Image (cartoon, one colour):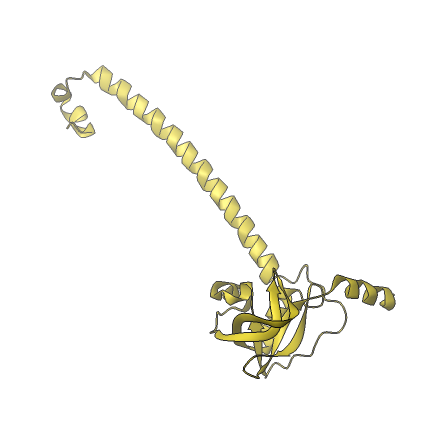
Length: 186
């Protein structure tokens, strides 16, 4: 096997003249330059995608923009602890970490009389929805409210679990009820 330094130090070993070494060096330089450009373009594209993703996550989870709740929201005491039943994306620890700043621990629980339908739970006799109960502070509950778009998309209701414990649950708002409420308010 002939290495590039062999070509430079002892071109006669490879059976090459200095002119052919120069030509091969130029070809190698051109190939590396082309590779360098494609690597730079790829890195720029990945950086742009990362920035877009970071901006989306900030806008969704942390920004003060884009969330304007309607009407009166349930009061939150900063010194209290709240139990929240989660049944969708908030079951994932990484989502809770992005939303609240910590993943916390979720204890398995079941909500009787409700069934999960896509992003919502609806009353259904005999049905049971499996999920987790997380305990959060007032600040974390506000972060959850923002994530769930409380008063815009979801409402927070108190429901009893199968264990008898009463917890907060986010339930999709009925669009017709929201439209009627808006009409009556105007």
